[in-house]
Length: 360
Image (cartoon, rainbow, N blue to C red):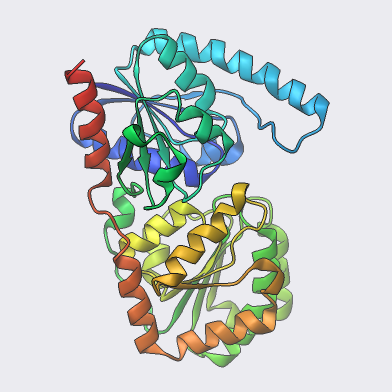
């Protein structure tokens, strides 16, 4: 059976699509992938064992009129291109992970009579997914509670697919504590600035602490320069700074605690590995969905979260210090994170969609 997966914008959209693609290839299915043209999209999808096609789209919300007109023009071009892709590929199933890039592909697929599906990673969907849910055959959700935003007959709880290489637990390569700082695939300027104030205190407090910091593609150089200015030589040996971490399984294995945003795919990976976290949700996310994600996890005891406006260096340092000093607390948090994990997400999606084709 031939699948077309469409995912773009950020790692949060792309990684679930990649996880599904891996599972499909293992089952002997044909896979094609459509993504965008941004640097991060091309970086994540380079050298993959399936064809990757590109569409150029832009968002509409919160933009000036001339930019909305430009985005509309790109969307029309993307729709026409998507029609050509679908005519050439002739997929039986289209799986979209949401966002603006899903629009032209799902619409083209629907017009050509293909079975279509949508995956929502967050608790509350954005405008694009709410509209797309009216068009697709199935809506797969990751977090219980988001079903109320979609047509009830279409909803299937699947959890959020996690890449196979993430789920393979790796060895910890050091004997001390480990802190992994993440801002998502695009990085987070606020968290990078915060880390520069908090990390020196933590490295001074915990002599066996290792810090791994993913800055995002744009911030690597200046963050590295700042660390060189403020850390001693001994402390510099206990921090590793990357723009983008390709081997996330290794990075997670070194960490006892995560500091970062609360994107849905990050949460799914932490669930799969049982990693506790301190979340600082991105305050400008659509529908404030990151805070809603973090709130659900915090209520079950898997994480703490602070709104960005109150996440001062002193408060973040104090909380991280307290957690590193409480082994029992970290273990309980890890168990709570594992309780969220849905192990067979990919299998649920594949069975549901292929049944639609077989029963047509």
